[in-house]
Length: 285
Image 1 (cartoon, rainbow, N blue to C red):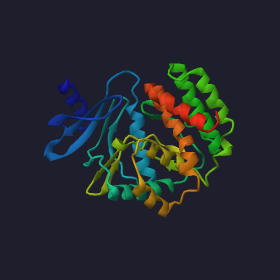
Image 2 (cartoon, one colour; image 1 turned 90 degrees about the horizontal axis):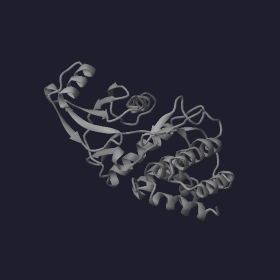
Image 3 (cartoon, rainbow, N blue to C red; image 1 turned 45 degrees about the vertical axis):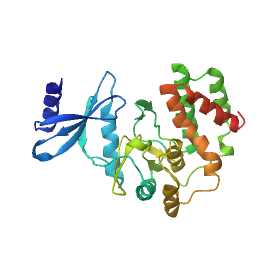
Image 4 (cartoon, helix red, strand yellow; image 1 turned 180 degrees about the vertical axis):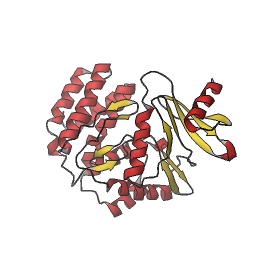
């Protein structure tokens, strides 16, 4: 199998790799460090089934490289079944210095303005389709193309009970009670899970596996707290660049985290259903 993969990578890059070593990560395939002549390294993602769309990941990385200053791996080759990128050294142990540096980078990313919410094409999150129709209203976009869409997907697949989806619908009819339109659509990474960020010596070296679109930055910030990607050091520095309106941590964070929780319900079911239930109950639904 490795010989076939080496040949595929050689065809893509025009140079024969000297070897491969397995790396962790990759929810829709295998990930390898590619050892190239002269001591250079790359990373190859290889799809493990039909329906893979690694070309979309390549598109998203190129979009970030072209439209922002966020450090991302350069894409050397992309297709639906193979993605080859530059190798970025680092690990996902983010101390206070790295978190502060991440805040500088994410705040700068959120300063990239779009003409509408969404994106020029649909993307992916966790391997799931993520619709991005260009929409003038953030509340409309978040309601229809994040909460209701992913709720419908989770119900259709089975993990989300119909009664819970009906409660989600009722909440979606009242979002304006807690959420407001931002000044402008901001470009977001979209999946600030800890293992998607690399750091070395207190500095961020790269952001991986994006799920990009133009959004309210608070949905990105909320997700970064859901699984403790960032903490106090990050938010202190971020707010030096972009102060948060009152009520984010107290209320809006939970509402925005309904979207990644619904993604996890769709993918894994289990305890994530209880988390959605808890948030809906908190807001009276």
